[in-house]
Image (cartoon, rainbow, N blue to C red):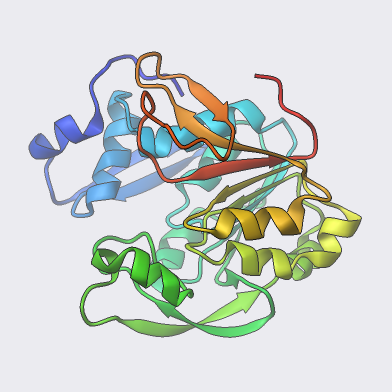
Length: 274
């Protein structure tokens, strides 16, 4: 992923048709973006025009750096499948992608194949069911954690919509699909719960790398659970001037000079050379 211009996706949004569909070839499939959804318009612009989209480019740059050929990847919080296909396009051998929201899973499941296993469940601390609060501002952000509603009230609206979903654990997924080299956990506040359901896996066959989006105080709790296996942690940021990925001290407070993106962290078994 390398943008060929300094144009940003938000500069184009006013002139992008806000209805209809756009498809884009990725990993020998066609991913479809719904243009009535603002964030999918941004993804479509990024794919079709190679403009800068820092919010998703920080993920793309991370994946380019760390995904290795033949990797088996756990994609928890797969949404419509864009990240799962990105993993495959970068050479991953197999992706197990989880998405618990039915209308999103329906779209994700159209991409399924021998190399992309789709699961209509959320990753949590135990198998069973949970109540999920649905995002109403766009199709990202649905969460089983009430504290996320307090952090992002604009996402959930004044009258919160909820539904029951099925949950599973990483330990169970490893039993069913084998070990994973990489975990991507973008599950809207449930990342620590996911680790509590991965105790056996962390002891017996931990992944090489964990990507996790962590808000508020979750970083401390998350690190406490993975520090024995993944002692090295970095915050991923994109430099405004060079548009290069930087892996920074996770406690960095002054992020002037970097794009303001969601707090994405990298947890590694080995120290990462800058």
